[in-house]
Image 1 (cartoon, rainbow, N blue to C red):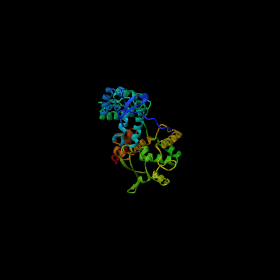
Image 2: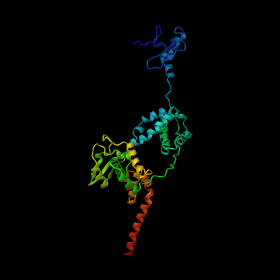
Image 3: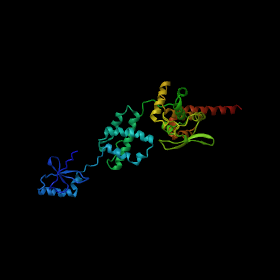
Image 4: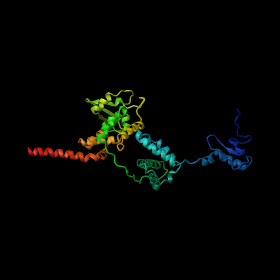
Length: 350
């Protein structure tokens, strides 16, 4: 194997080399190579330039300025505690936006962004309503980081309003569709559906549940969890039918709902696709997995529970509970009012 040809520096001062076509360069380890303006090493001007290079001043001036574009801002952010401390489900949503921003605007200097540019980005993704708003939310966080780094003085995404969805609002599953799903589903699809409906939790929280999370308290079987999104610890009692279903479920892994091989938990994507297949089969396309969370909250509202009590099960704040149950709250209140009225009339008749 022929030896690699070395750069010639015979008779040249230290750190001086002849490189391409015999051109003289100064290069010290760890520093950029600098081409001599004077190429005659016997010329006094060459020696003056050489002395300047030995001080390192010229190399420092040549070092490229740190890039302050979107790609480097994202790199800064993902290394910060603000990103590292995100709940897994939140980080997953952020990652989709960060990947998009890096691909589309990675080379754009952060200082070039203004509010119209953020609005234009939002409008460019309007076909994906949730994603377009998430782009604004994540951009707002990134620009806040840029302000902290001293790259910009204001947040161009701060004043951008989130758009309202044109899609119809989510509704709880109708009881006939719930029964149809249960009639068709078997195995882990049925177990997932029953656990979502019974606990009122997000799908990822249910998929994360382990057998060791099931714990009886005062004779009532319940499941312990810490919500991925909020970090809120909960203990939720399980209905008898679900306890029976769990008792008849073979334990093959630490996770209650496993993948097809029984070697780990069922993936979000796999679970979502399996439920979607049955939804299409029974004509329940308009009622997605998250609508089961609405169903749980609305059932409790119809049962006469107040917002705080419902939130104790779903882990939601009062405002979110009210949003989820607004479709049935009037019915629940009317039911309670009529019951109170009937009780009063019975007493008056007596």
